[in-house]
Image (cartoon, rainbow, N blue to C red; front, side, top):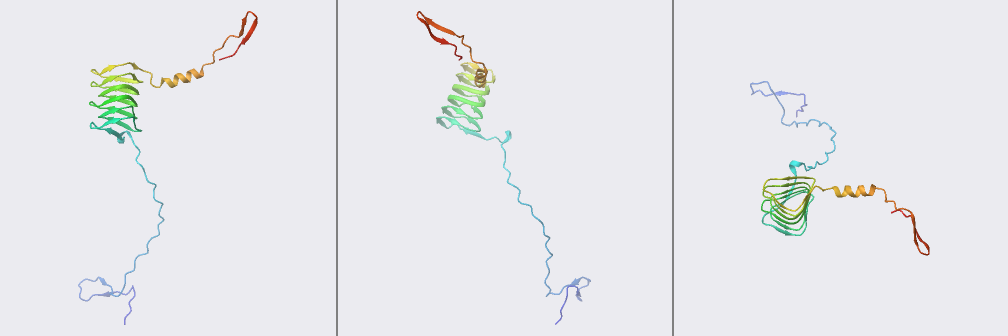
Length: 192
């Protein structure tokens, strides 16, 4: 019995080439795996809502909602809402009807509101029908829009008024006394 080592080479005499042929009993040796230090897996990444990927909750034209509607995202109303609507940006579609107050940073009206709008920015399109007051910082009214109410540029000023009132000094009441026919009854000198 012959024993071959890895360095022994035998040549096939039938082959025309001079390539070495290995013995069939020899088992191939796998190369030694390199030891690599693996880094811990990266933490998962979450998609952050950007203006391009904003989520809009839609109330379709087939829906009629009775009650308050609130969202921490944008709302588009194409149906009917009998109650208040509150969202970041609220868009009332051309055939939509809302009976109540609509709150938001931006409110765009193309349909009908019978109530009030309170928003930083208000857009009344040419098909808008507004019956009620509009409290705003910025307003754009297109030609053809209908408004039966007051437009008041007071959005956010109520908080400022309260802050200014608290900062004012208390009124000074003059000191003195109240007398009746018998003499002094009470001293006046308190500050309000």
